[in-house]
Image (cartoon, rainbow, N blue to C red; front, side, top):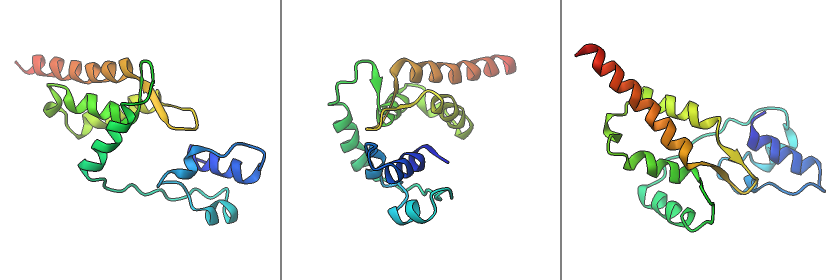
Length: 137
């Protein structure tokens, strides 16, 4: 069972447990699914978000006192603002995603990760590009 569904099922089955902030997420399974099929994974769907809405989310997240931690939208900003961003390809993004996915922590109100981990992951990807470039020249 994925993390979001687990938190929603737990809050449904254990009324004394605090409800998870995941219940407010657009990707949260509907209550009917949680009640009728708690053990069946809900087929999450992603959706396109206009850039203007992402910028609002970024603006709001930058107001949080996170002390070295950043939200996923802030991590995206770091990646997109890197001077070598346009060198990244689909495979590089998969590597970044796999690397950072393991480092994200959820405290019930939202996901965060350490800023240095994003920069380290980017450096690792670019290091392989430099090495592969040197092999061919």
